[in-house]
Length: 441
Image 1 (cartoon, one colour):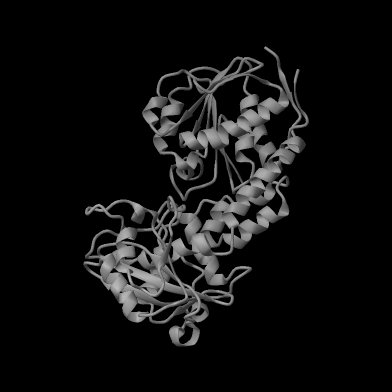
Image 2 (cartoon, rainbow, N blue to C red; image 1 turned 90 degrees about the horizontal axis):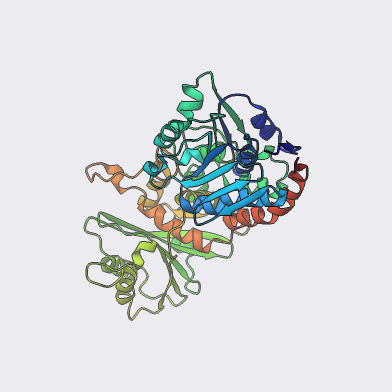
């Protein structure tokens, strides 16, 4: 079998990872820190003729990120002998065999004897995956590694930090250590992420999300004022209505942007046996005539049929019949990821390049309580939701959910698109610089 000579201009944490002699390793880093590329190069460092499996959390992530990076790197270096998409297998010129798998159904990972395996974005997988794959290491060299951004203090933290054994090691790094990224990528992350999420997503740190506030950028002194309708309401400007739907409680923030100042004028709410027609009637009693336009932003699930056949938004349109401004509906095909929505709302509390920090009227009881009491879920990927109606926390999240649907569609900030564009733009130049010294001998 040919021997690979690797002359790789990696980052310092990547080089530390490749040179680490431990049998089981994990490369934990912030967004864009080069984790997947570190994993791909480690595949190429495996002995010629060895056999291993590459696992990602979902089939989509496997295709879009892990395999995409693998193919780019190995094809650019001329060391990919064969890739069969139908079988999800690949062979390198030195005879190394790869099986690509997702852990959508972990039990399907049982079976083949392996010499090595790699879990990409391992923190998003259940602990069972690591246990199953360890049981497959029956061939040489008998090594495995994981690359990931942390997801709270889950099984990966317990395995590689709290309960770490002698043959386990951890390499941890910030997004900033990847010198191949453009400066404005890091600046965008720093301007968007805050608090615990910033520590996790940018610095690659393991954080504890239990009891952690989600809307940590909100403050009464900065964001709450009195008499907003009297001071800011303009009948010539469109009203934005942020809608979330819950039978136990509905709380819809009523928003206007006056010049560059977003204002929550009031909230329309109904506690117990809430319904869309009742909420619309309440809105119309507060704003009986509004000529400036009405824009509805809301939960994507409201576009699905109800028990009576009509969608929630069709019911809402019927309830608004005869109103001075016909409602326009701005509804996504699917809801944005919860973390993205939370970070964008936090950005609104601080202000954006185009808008001042949002002002909320002091009468918005449910909105303000959400800001002060809503917490991250334990894994940091969603919000803590309490279903028991006897617990007053079951009333939380609804007002800010509706506000967040508006923010994600209407805020003049395309942060998450910018991040994706930066990754795409920098990918090719990054690879040319980083892999120019890789060759087969």
